[in-house]
Every structure is written in C-alpha cells, then in structure tokens.
Length: 277
Image (cartoon, rainbow, N blue to C red; front, side, top):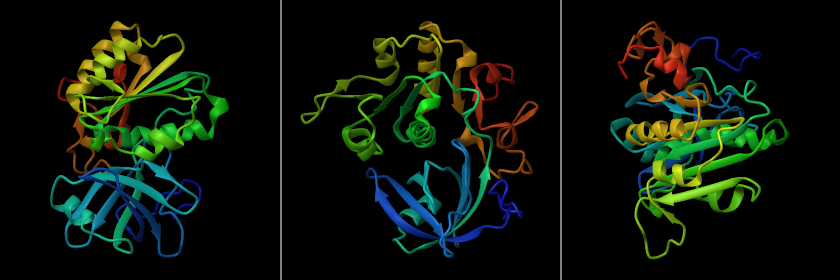
C-alpha cells in the first residue's frame, strides 16, 4: 500500500476485509462497515471516491464510500442483482475483497468559503453523504450547509439516524416524501418541485446533486431557473464506472473516461462532452 495516497500499489489486487457492522437502511439498502483483518481501513478515500467490492464467487462492482472512520470505511449498497444479493445475504464477520480508491473526488479545496446545497434522491444520498460528513468535520471552511433529500416513502429514506438525530440543527435539513403518509408530518412532493419552493439563492452557493436520472434532469433545469450557473452544479457519474482504471473502455464518453477523469463533474464540463449519457 502506498502510504502517501492510501492507494494499493497493485490496482487489481483486493485486500481481504471483514464486515464489522451491517446496518439495514431500508428494505433493499444496507450499509456495510469494512475493515482489514489487520485492523485498518483498506484505504483513505477523499469525499466522492469509490471502492471496488467483491464477494467471493459472485464478482465485483464499484460502490461509493459514503463514510469512513479511523479504521474503517462504509459503503451503502442497494440490492439489485446477483452480486448485491450475495452481499446482502452476508452477516457481520463475512469476508469481502476491497480495492481502491477510484475516481476523482468532490472539489473540497476549491469550494472552501462557498455555501453548499446537497440535493439527493433515494440511494443517491450515499455518494454525497461523504462530502456532507467532510463539510461538517471542517465546518469553518464552508458557509451555509443545506441538504434537500427525498424518497418515495419514509421507509425508503436512507441514513435516518443522520437525518433525524446526528446532523446538527445549524445545518438546513429539508426532507420530502413523494406521497403523504399517516405518520409523516413533513413536506410532501417531488425533490425538483421542493427545490423550487425552497428558492435557495445562487449567490456564492454550489449545488451538489445525485439521484435517479429523471430527478437530476428536472433538478438541473430548476437550478438553472433559480440562477445557478452550470459551473456551480456538481454531480457524479459513478454508475458509469466499471474497471476503475481506464482499461475496459465501458465508461468512455468522447475524450473522457469517467473512471479516470471523473466520476465527479460540473454540468459545464458535462456539456462539453458528446451527448452519450
């Protein structure tokens, strides 16, 4: 392992790691806390970077690192196929392979002094949660912090402990559900519409957004309507990442490779790419 970057010297060699904690976020999302058997975290990612996680006998895939501690990293994984099903069937103490970190990261240095607006939908809160945690840990480096997050139902909200208990009162936390529920007295409506209702000022503010493609598309239009420039709207294309090292070519868009040049891009940068996404 390279001590300067925290990245493994052989990018294709996974470290065997242990699942030390598994949290059930929703009916189909679990958060896996991972540590090496020597008691260390596999690597030290920057906010927005990813890990390649493998289940022996089932394959591997790229997942965002949504949190990290002194000796662990966490990834929140939605059950959608064979690999993720195998991961969801594991218990604490289970063995996985981990390699990384992969991709670039959110521009944490360039955004110092800015107000930050985090916009997420469903499991899309997972990649931007790493930046939220970083901004809270380095609170003096940033201006106002707001999180606008929505899901189909209360049961589908991820990171409920953060939302309702851990995130400080001084941070604006704006939660919405797609439809009304008997035990929900918060906002009801879709994320793009709620964004317009809140009418955040674009002055010295950058929006960081991740969620379902249809949500992102409408949010982008609404953010521009609110006065946000495309340079001040940042998203992640991590779903396009495959091998992570620019060899397979499956994440290629024009002259860019999402795994090498991204996955974090501003909308201005994405506008310069061919219309393949």
